[in-house]
Length: 218
Image 1 (cartoon, rainbow, N blue to C red):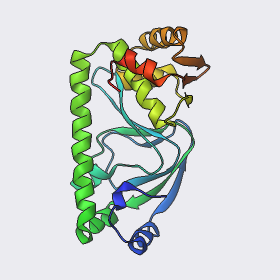
Image 2: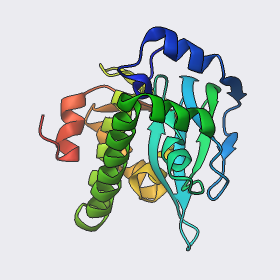
Image 3: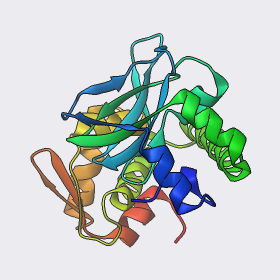
Image 4: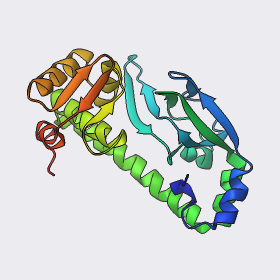
């Protein structure tokens, strides 16, 4: 397993760092950490997928991203010393390697490439949040749902047919839409042969068709 965080670091150095990490497993739906928890460790995803979400002051749940094998979460807050900025939970049975914050900071001091990767990851995080904010004001809910389904198809496999094992409430949280809107969009997409629906799952069949609904240029 390779993680982007270790780009440019010699294999023996990576192995030495990983030897200090502890393995942690999670059940579907289990919370890894909550918003405003102390940022004491970074998680390297080994297995499963984890969603990153926040709850607004009005009680609405907004899912920001999904992290899977080979990706990380929690690294930015560890480096900045801030509290957790979101809640992370397991979308399916999962496993992470938990690296203490002190080890990540030492790694960043000893290896310039780690600091560079962290800066790029922070920039991407800010860009994603900015994109989602603009999208919320300028793109209708139906199009946002189609875009999230298209993105989830890539997260869960890439080449159709791809099964997305998320319930409609979870897709709604990612799209910033209601479950009713998600259901309507998916039913219409199914009628057009773009997706197939089953209990708790959506299978993406036609990526180009969904891209037209999402108004995404191929």
